[in-house]
Amino acid sequence: MTEDKKRFLFSLFIPLCFLIILWIIQLAQFIFKINFDSFGLLPRTTSGLIGIITAPLLHAGFAHLFSNTLPLLFLATGVLYFYKNSAFKVFVIVYIVPGVFVWLFAREAYHIGASGIVYGLVTFLFFSGVIRRDTRSIALALIVTFLYGSLIWGVLPQNNNVSWEYHLFGSLTGIASAIIFRNSDPYKKYDWEDEPDDNNDNLEISHRKGHPFDE
Image 1 (tube, helix red, strand yellow):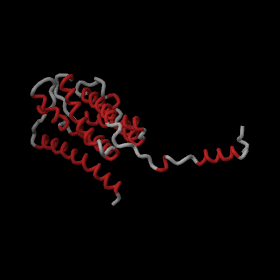
Image 2 (cartoon, rainbow, N blue to C red):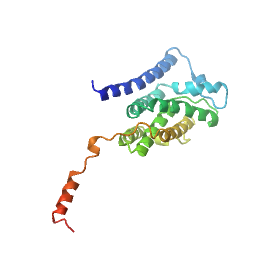
Image 3 (cartoon, rainbow, N blue to C red):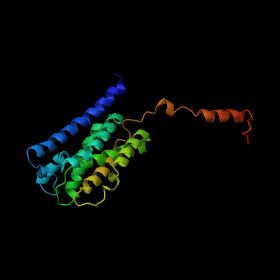
Image 4 (cartoon, rainbow, N blue to C red):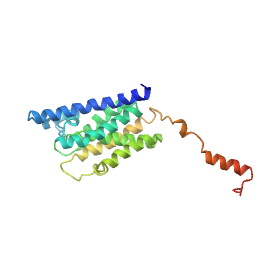
């Protein structure tokens, strides 16, 4: 097994483990008819502080969880694969920091779901790609954004049943993380990216030899 394949499988394994935990929690609520919403994040309350840790693990139903599952899988795998030195730090930051700001500034309602992490990872990948000129990161972030087009508008207060605050603060946290870790995991170009354009070389040679393209 090649080193790249091992790295990819490891990058895939960690998000899968996290998603298994989310699905076990949701299945437990369904099978045993229990509701963990009280462990959600309730802003500006002492009891709601626990939600900073527990809210991303809870979802309003299977549809809610499924809507986060594939984006989490793609994005977390991409971050782990392309940014192995800073990936775990980034994940901890986009997991915790948005919840802190939601607790401080969001509406007085229970906020649950891993959407804040999704938005944090999307913006981290996209802006890391822009800052580092890493086209792979930009492409991955854009693919997820286009597949789940509502991501673009999710930071705006359009639906009272959706925690747009988590989306907004997740996005801002992802951008901040991209700036903070901009010098980690330097982007290594493939050999073909540095190869000169053969056509341009031929034109330049022809120009020197008095080819009809001469001015």
